[in-house]
Structures are given as C-alpha cells and as structure tokens.
Amino acid sequence: MPQTKRTVAIVGAGLSGAAAAVRLWDLAKELEHRGSSMPLEIHLFEASAILGGRASSRFLPEEDLLLDGAQHLTMNCCTAMLEFLRRTDLLRFWKLQTEMTFCVRSGASETAGPLRFFPFRNSASLPQPFHLLPALWGLGHLNRLERLQLLGICRQIQKSTPNSGDSFRAWMEKLGCPASVADHFFDPVILSAFSDQMENVSAGIAKTVFRRMFLETKDGWHFWIPQCPLREIFDANLTPFLERSGIRIHRQTPVRRIVPGRLLIQDTKSGLRSEFAADSVILAVPWFQAGKLLPELVSLDLFQPERFEPRTISAVHFWTDRVLFPQPNLVLPRETIQWIFRPPFGPEVPNSAHHSDGLQGPDPKLRFLPENVGPETCSPAERVRHGFYHQALLSDADRCVSAKPQALEQLVRAELQMLFPEARFLHFRTTRCPAAVFSCSTWMEHSRPTMLTPFPSIFLAGDWTATQLPATMESAVVSGNLAAEETFHFLKNLHESQ
Ligand SMILES: Cc1cc2nc3c(=O)[nH]c(=O)nc-3n(C[C@H](O)[C@H](O)[C@H](O)COP(=O)(O)OP(=O)(O)OC[C@H]3O[C@@H](n4cnc5c(N)ncnc54)[C@H](O)[C@@H]3O)c2cc1C
Image (cartoon, rainbow, N blue to C red; front, side, top):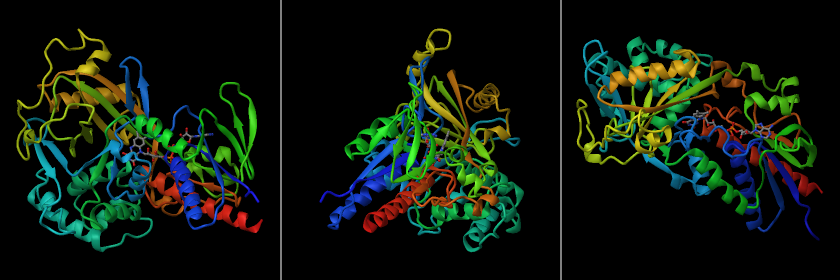
C-alpha cells in the first residue's frame, strides 16, 4: 500500500529556514536507512527573489558589483554552522583565519604617528588554556599594569559565574576590571561579537560565548571568512543543492498568515492570494515579522517582539590606490572603526610582506595603482575594478554617529585619512543594516521563545529563538536544526498513529 506523503512548509529561506529544510531531509533519509520510511515533501517559501535572508548581498548597478551588507564571519566554535556548510558543500567558499592584528596609532596622545601592529595568535607550544597568554601579553596598546590586570580578569572569567541579570559591564566591575582594560579590550571584543555595548549585553550569554571561543578548545576563536559575495554562496550555490535534494523552492512568495494545516500565500506578480495545505509548518522569519504571520504568538504572550531591541551594523566599503596593510584584517581598539577587512576580492599579498610588530612604512610588496586611476578620470565601475578593496566595519554604529550613512562615511573617511595619510581613496560605498541583529540584553536571557508554539503542528526557527546564542548565523542554523527535529518528531507520531 502506498504511504501517505507528509508535507512540510518552511516560511523564510534565510539560514534558519535552509538549515531546517536540509535537516528534515537528512532525518527522512536516516529513517529510510533504518528500514522504515515516511515520505516527505519539503517546500521552502521565500518572500524575496533570493535565498539567504540577512546573509546576502545587493547588486550595485553604478559599480557593476555584488556587495555584502557587511563582512560576515563565523567562528571555528560555531559547529552547527560549519556542519551546515560542509553538508551543503559550501565550506569551499570560506577561508579560515587564525590571526587577528590589533592596530593603534603611536605617539603619546594616540592621535598621530605611524601605526603599531600587535598580532594576536595562539602560542604553538603552550597548551589550552594558556595558549593565548603571549598574545594577551603582547597587546602593546595596553601598558604593563593593564596587561597584568587583563590576565587576572581572564582567569576570573574562566573560574566565576555571573549572576543572572548582570550585564557584562556590571560583571567586569564586580571582578575589579579597571575601566581602561574594559574600554580598550573587552569593549571592542563584545562589540564585535554582539554588535552591542557591554552595559547592555547579558554577562551570562557573554560567558557562554567566551567559553566556546577561548576556553573549550584552542582554536574556537579562529574564524572563517567568505571568499565571494554571500549571494553567490547562499543563493547561487545553495539552490542547486536544495533542488537536488527534492526541496521545492517558492521565491517571491510571501506568506501572509499561518493557521494549523495551511498557509495563506500571495503571488507578488499577480497579487492573487491562495492557500497551501501542509501537515506541519516551520516559521523561520525574523522576530519583527513572526507575530504578523502567527498573531497567537503575541496574543498568548509567547514572546514580546517590542522588547527585542534591534542593532545596526554598518560598513564603509572603499577602494584605494594601494593595499593598505599586509594582514587580512585589523582590529582598531581606539578608533570609531572597529575592524578593517581586506577581503579576498583584492589581491593576495605575500606572507613575507607581513610586519609583525613594527611601524607601517611603504612596502614594495604592497601593490600601487598608477596616478591616472582616480575619481576624476574613471567611472565608479572602473575605480572599483582597478582599486584595492577594503571594508571598515562598525557594529552598533548608531551609538556613535547619526544614523545617516553620509555622516558615518564622513567620519570614517576622516579616520582613514589619518590612519593611512599616504593612500589615495578612489571610491566609497556605505551600507547600513538597521535590524541586522538584536540586543542580547539581560532580559533576553530567559525571554526568547522555544521552537514550540500554541499549535502542535507549527514550529519556530530563527536566530532570535531560544538558542542561548547571540543573533548569528550559528544561532540561525541551531534553531533550524531544532525546529526540524521537533517537526520530524511530530510528523512521525502522526504517521504512526494513522
Ligand atoms: C550586516 C550584517 C552583518 C552580520 N554579520 C554577521 C557575522 O559576521 N556573523 C554572524 O554569524 N552573523 C552575522 N549577522 C547576522 C546573521 O546574518 C543572521 O543572524 C542570520 O542570517 C539570520 O538568519 P535567519 O534565518 O534567522 O533570518 P533571516 O536571514 O532574516 O531570514 C528570514 C527570511 O525570511 C524571509 N521572510 C520574511 N517574511 C516572510 C514572509 N512573510 N514570507 C516568506 N518569507 C519571508 C526573509 O525574506 C528572509 O529571507 C549579520 C547580519 C547583518 C545584517
């Protein structure tokens, strides 16, 4: 007798929705290998024309270029995300980086003078948890006393547990962390990981992140950087993988409402509404949209979307007449710009060009463009094609500068000109993503919804659900996996009871 096919509708094709689809497919295959079977039909509904959600890129016609909203990176401790990339054969588009470089201006006032670089890397000989001692001790932007204090605080972070409800700043104060160490070490680290300030971030969630990055394994903090625009990874290359697995993708098909057993969908071209029947639904949209599709979540007080505080991530993309520095990235603990990435869209710079400690000076191995390539002579598309690409990243930028991209760009331009006075800047593009992530506040510690909803056949996924992680690709994939497991369990029970 033919078996009844079960239909699952996943709403939202960001990383959480895509991960849910892949995990469901894997669970169905595992069951088949164990000699049992439950045929599944998996449908992925996406409002936009492309997959990837927030992990995506935009096409800029003037520059003839696909540009990411901002540099995405995933840490080596993000095991669910890495497994998802391996499983979908997308890890080949990512490159592991095992070193960061802290960079400050020298001179007593820190306002002028050549740049000083402090590499931050694991000691090859020291075992975990001592592997970062030399790197921490080498952070020359802190004085000797501050570095000793930093080592002491790191030890205390390892040993102690914060009180529930403490912010990271409050916890640091309790541990006796001096303000200068908090401001010039922990603040940039927290800002990069959470896109938020220490006074807002929950100490409990921060401790979880620190443990995974620095304490559990030696290389948890190493990070993976995409080698091409995100759209090429999560749309162009993920699509054929999903299609080969039989997952049906419905692009430009926004879902308007979900009720048990069906979706109300709308065709964006014709505007026509229709219904789609599904045995189970996974709602994988951002927190500010979930309540519109499933109002019961809010009316039954399962979550309070208005208490999620969005955080902006901005990036100033710029093209120069030369490679500004030989390292792949710089961390700037004393500037408004937090990171500068030299992503792989530019030329490879030989390792031997690397200055490990010293002052920046002209280096013959870093390439220069001829004088005649410039804003006066070339179109934006030509400057972008010839110039060397860099990206200045500013998490939670709205706190330090007006929300207007022009104001941010002006501030970044001035800072860049001070940092790299000899360079010519050929072209700038500023991107600002207002609800890139949400604040991991102390309120959020216990207030994120689980994958369950008031309806047994409807499940939630998304970086904002109760994963205990900050709003990241890892959180999205973990949530997708969990939602898929709940859905599969529900369908299996349904299947067996009939
Ligand atoms: C600029 C920026 C930089 C970031 N940097 C990093 C980083 O370095 N590292 C990191 O780990 N994370 C980073 N993040 C966060 C990361 O991108 C997100 O946490 C993750 O992509 C969220 O995935 P998601 O599936 O939960 O949600 P989303 O990506 O938001 O996906 C939701 C999908 O649902 C679709 N949708 C919405 N409504 C409907 C509807 N009615 N019907 C059908 N579909 C609908 C949307 O179009 C979207 O495709 C960054 C985010 C931004 C914006």
